[in-house]
Length: 156
Image (cartoon, rainbow, N blue to C red):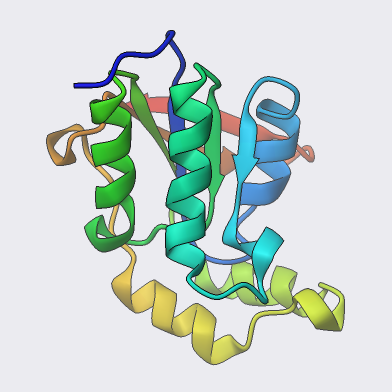
């Protein structure tokens, strides 16, 4: 097993346009390295690149936040493995699905960052709430607070 200074790996889980990136910027900017496939859209092998960046940060003891939809164990499984390999806590932040709200927010995005509705529906069909039983050290639910911010509560 590898050893590295203490850090953490944060995995955001939710639909496109659910508030993940806004929450990430408000909560983790300046304290966590941001890894998002949105930052390298034209790159080939986006999954490999994501995992390489996560591994590099964790190997240096840097906290990481992964801002993608991460809708199921298929996506978050390799992240859990990396976090456990480096001996860091892996924490999920769950954004419960609100398809209509996500569609409305997505429609307000600039054209180049808008997700086709079919993509949002496809993610909704695969989306599963993360649980501690999946291997996460903690799971938190994130919802809008109605005042432009977020409400975060731990889940069992």
